[in-house]
Image 1 (cartoon, rainbow, N blue to C red):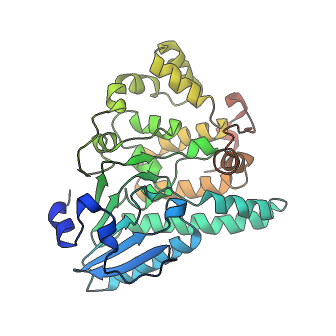
Image 2: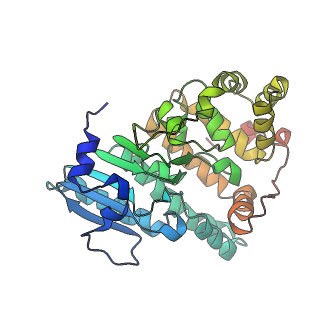
Length: 345
């Protein structure tokens, strides 16, 4: 692990932890409507996500802008390291802008070819950015706080150092919207202890800072760490029930266990998209012995598949647009999803 005195670093850059993030904004030359800010301070390239009304959800413009700036800073001798953080205490980044993607779907859903091409650009650029963070030649520090999910983890977890405030809420919520865990999550979740990563991916469960630290997704916590660690409290059950390679076997194991936690997990999983569950489990198992770039290539192929599937858009509608939490999945039974017949990879 790269050695780094993060407390001294924060102090030297004027980050007063008791008043974070307001002090970060002082002295920066910004326009109020900008969604992402850049400056060089003390040989550090500072990236501040500033779209608080959308919990810093990433749109295509933000992704392209960030990627270009990282490329420039990699060549800039003034920049010795890069730090990314949020201007809002509520969220680091909630992931991709699902509302924007859904609006694109509404405008083009009658013609699948242009729809796929338009949304494909978003995922093409996002995955390139994830890879850039992973392979960045200079130290890349992420300071996470509040809601940090989905594509937001692709901006942070792959970095050199991940520091989190104690209000962290971390998750890969994709299966709850009929999708799969992407942004490089198949790589880092397949490498957590036992089957904890499998559980996190399939259930979309939310982790606090202590839980994220305990499985290696962050490196440090700012402030008093939360005491609750549900993951470790139930890890024996999770490892036992989620060790299977078929969703049907996982659900059967949860039913057989019959504990309150097992039944709660079973009920959550039965509300998820059968297609999303089966393909998430399949690509996670494939990721165990694959390097990062191979995982990203597979995620890209799977993302293109999902762009043509109704569950992705139905999941966004039910969770983000109408918020009725009542999606209609197609198909709606695990037995009707045959991964081997899909010819994705």
